[in-house]
Image (cartoon, rainbow, N blue to C red; front, side):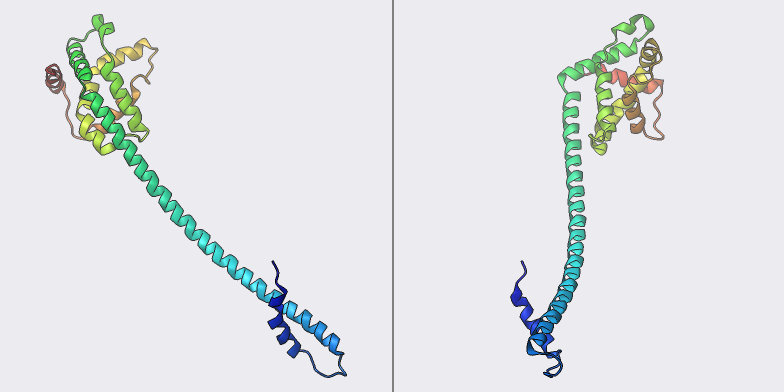
Length: 213
């Protein structure tokens, strides 16, 4: 709210600028002119002050935005890391569970003896597990380093061992290449550039899985 008392200093200055000769104008006219000049000076000063205040406000706003952006970025990174680790813990727990070990053992036995006559007897529990891993990995909800350490070995070998079954499933569904696509992408991203997974390696891998208790 405007305070008239703020005009007093400027009024004193303005009055000094007005000629004191009575022949020039009356005392009342001097005061009127002084008030007008004081108002002009005060208004100009307030305009300068307002411009300076606006400039300072923009500086503060910019600084606040930069700080907030950094804080949000740090929070998002922390949240993403927490989600990635939590997801890994849940998946690893499930992968090493007694139920999954039985499923892995059974799947390895089925893949070792796989053929078209027994295609419909294949259990997809392990395949569905790695499909789920692939989904959360693709969405950035699984810590990459932990995923590599826990699932890369098995994912790459199970993918190679199950390719014949998966190819047949895709053919049965009108060449639907999306079946187990996330598993495929995950296995591909986990495989080392010079990693060799041939028939002998697959046989050794399936033999080890069949030994699970």
